[in-house]
Length: 437
Image (cartoon, rainbow, N blue to C red; front, side, top):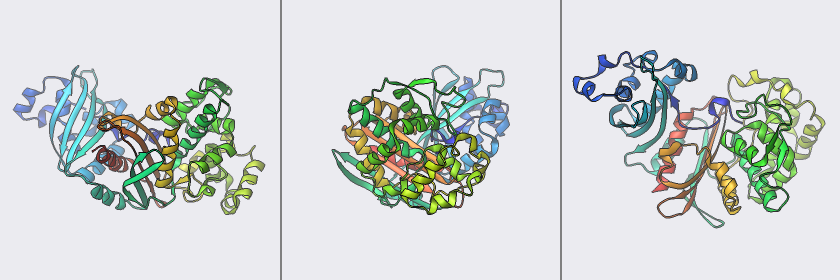
């Protein structure tokens, strides 16, 4: 599952304003700040240190998208992980409004995409941290950072060669984790398999038949709108659209996807049988199904499948209790989609073996880490998953330097509290950077 604000699972996005600029600039800095972009870039250290007011730096559009409390939490997380901001090493812009800033912290250098409004106040409307370069980083250091997160964590970095998975670094790689929307890769795998078998084509047009909660692409679309299978796959993977996902599950067949999951090497497939649609999972987690939820959780595969079938007219979007998901984690150890880092690595082997450009293209629309982190990779595909208490990130990449293929996958579960996206993304991005070496 993916909450709207976490759909892309990208690095923390932020936005910032200008009125206090000259008060904090030295004469030398002010002289060098020739454009709105230069002036705002020069203020980043002061902003992150809390010496420039949030409302003075950011445009109203940014403040609406990223409230001050969220911005402060993201800033605190960055400083906790990388140390205090020290200086702007370089600011580059071709138009004086948008560009890239290299911001040095005590423990590394962050790459920031910055956009400044054209209005008279020249406030910042876009700020995106796209990657970090750590000084003297290592797998051991990242592993320690991941292990320090509250709850349960696991990760795997491995080279892929044919059917072989050769680990470079790992922790709890054989443990089952709730992975949220990462399970959609199994659906993509089965779709590609049916296409390879001649049963379907990417260009086949089908009706948008099922709707779900948290659907970034298909929300409020008319039922039965004709769309291609490639469009559904692109929506499902790139923006984690749940309506596209449930449409594909019903089209391909729940049993067929379960069989694909087994053949791809999942080590504990019963955890995902029956394979829940997103709307079924959302519904069962909510307060409207307090009667059915214990029966489902306690049942074996056959009993669970019968419960889903007997209640198919109830387990619909109309009966999803969205209010239930506004607090903290809900049943993430029993009502979810599960996989170990090892399982994900084997799934990536299966996906790559399809030799389908369309499949790989779907995975690369949103690479999850931004252009800077992706610069060392000739191909980078991604799928993430998130809900309260759950974060999962999985990347398939071909290294530019030698053409070798790698998987980087990590999961973080905390039954007691929500988890911090920016911290986790930073750690996974560091794993990717180390794999690139």
